Amino acid sequence: MNYNKKTVKDVDVAGKKVLLRCDFNVPMAKDGSGVITDDKRIRAALPTLQYLLEQGAAVIACSHMGKPKGEVKPELSLKPVAARLSELLGREVIMADDVVGADAMAKAAALQPGQVLLLENTRFEKGETKNDPELAKALASMAQLYVSDAFGAVHRAHASTAGVAEYLPAVSGFLIQKELEVIGGALDNPKRPLVAILGGSKVSSKIGVINNLLEIADTIIIGGGMAYTFSAAQGGKIGDSLFEADWQEYANEMVAKAAQKGVKLLLPVDTVCGDKFAADAKSMTVDAGMIPDGWEGMDIGPKTVELYCSAVKDAGTVIWNGPMGVFEFPAFAKGTEAVAQALSNTDAITIIGGGDSAAAVQQLGYADKMTHISTGGGASLEFMEGKELPGVACLLDR
Ligand code: ADP
Ligand code: MG
Image (cartoon, rainbow, N blue to C red; front, side):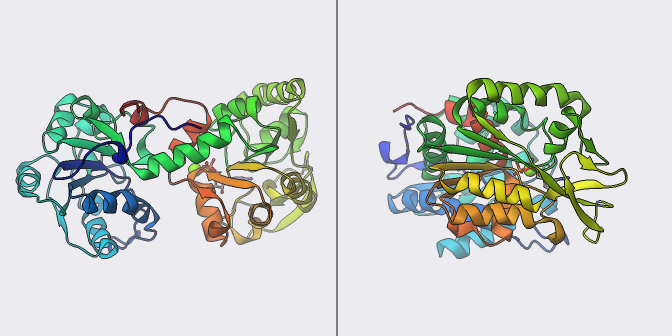
């Protein structure tokens, strides 16, 4: 795919104040200790940040975290991010007490080339999620250039992800460029065969992806909770499995559409079910469509694992979105793990989108075996649906 947006390399940043939108929405320990449990997103921002500093820019970084809904919530402060970022960069990160208040404005005004300022959680401002032009203008007033590198937030048209681009020249950083080149390349001009593995909890959250991938993939593999709606639609018994009655017709349509387009659509042939939704549930394996009452499907079964693993073996490209089962419970993680392992053993380009899928691959220890793990769950999903991303559309074309 030809990436057609300007990047930091296409503009002169020396001596400029640069507003850099990052995705520092990192997971924090639940105990309020301020411990960041996974700093992958902070690390992912480093190449662009370091480049800007090396080129002599003064960097005003900003990000959202969580959902404070326009209120100042101390537990969602970016202060722990500033500390971690400073460790990773090996230089001081000045923390502002607010987003566009007096403290942020004064610190931004005093910022020198080579220095980094981090604004507070942009969602402490009510105008952020409303894409309020006043907030966008206030953010823009601190800088001479806007750089977006928050891939995880590009599907949102918020003040700091899109609105600000109305008031400043706007270009992308290296992370957005990489995400769009890798995922976009797989969608536009994949090395074939292109195999898409779709799982996760609900059909309803993956409709757009299934639809769009049916147009381009050679094989589509269905797993996870949504497989049971397909099974029920075909008259299978699914016990207490995840089920969306309203989507049965859609599931059948997708099966028909795949047949009509010559896309191979694979559904589970067996399933591991549990007698309750819990880590210590009793489990047994049954053929697909044969789940007894009182039991629910929690993972794909061994025959399905074999079928799916052989389907990815000779793939040119694999796009994976959605775990094959309730991988959070070790007893029901085998299907997801087997697929992760199969991907790690292919020569295919392997792309993981979706927040939980990325977490699963990481947790199971296969992260460094994949070609690309997206940093943006919702963003990668919308990109795979073929939707326009407002945080990208607002950037200058090359
Ligand atoms: P992603 O974030 O990768 O797009 P989703 O959010 O769609 O994935 O789904 C992930 C969730 O789906 C996981 O928390 C997993 O436990 C759940 N899941 C997978 N299979 C099942 C199942 N058979 N029953 C219930 N939940 C499931
Ligand atoms: Mg998810």
